[in-house]
Length: 406
Image (cartoon, rainbow, N blue to C red; front, side):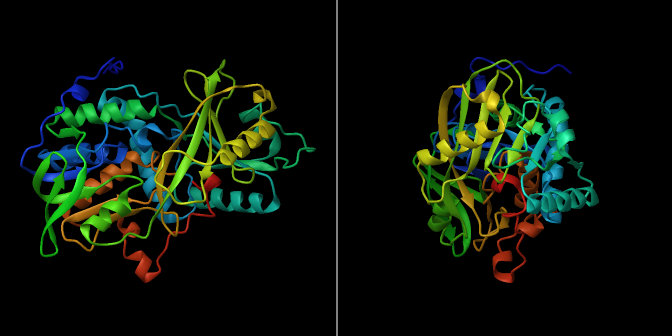
């Protein structure tokens, strides 16, 4: 089965239908998670009477503003399970969707610069192996073999003492992924409706029965919220609150360079991650800006600090020029893990709070969210990520367990 070349103007992007008066399911948000949910509703559950509503354009939010990293080497059992399921799906998606979205399993290297980093890294490798996730601990000489351009001098401010490595991890082209999912969902009969903002919810008592939009009222039996960065705003309109905060998340790319960077390198201590895209740009990012906000921009000092950290790790990039910077908006929960499941409003479901980990989770988030919407019950993989955990205290605290707050 040959992969479909990227079209100049995908036909389905121009086929922006007028919303019908009713649908079985409405998904709010046409990013990666919304599109994956629609695809798996059709593929796994035979539900095609679905409208995916997007206030802007398809995949124009965080899906087009991430740094494309895919990995599953998370510490906690619950996180490892859902991200490993995602990685397994990633490995088959290009053929399944018949679309080459440049999935490249070049590995992810998480560096250790202190004794505490080493202890945490070894612990995480052992936890990964117990959960069936591929992971290795590398000494500095082994790190040099994986990424020869790294500065491994013992005289640096933060010398590299080793690192964890996941060989199956890698990157994919984010907009290609969105178009692949959208094309297949469109072929199955799902309506992808752009320029359609949800402004309110229709309720019968405590049960959602429809949505109000700037293009009219739509009746529906089930609504799934998958609008990264604005989940709390939508929840307020529906009459409940989510334990999430919205933060700007920035990244940048350089001008094109010859391919010299063979893997993805992440460092929590100096707070930067660096990869090289297929065309040759260096892709760099860090953690979220500290303040709350909905603007797709951030503080200059964050960009400045991440470039300083990158140059320390990669002196070869010292004279590279920044081509462009951008910002997205991410939802962050108190335990830095997502919320996927039911809400206090009957037939209203939510998928939010992924922080900086949303892209890598795309297929598993869609798979489990589709299951939850179709059956009314969580899939075993997303059951631990219920909203109720913030009442019971069964948190999944990944905040200090994963590199660069991922």
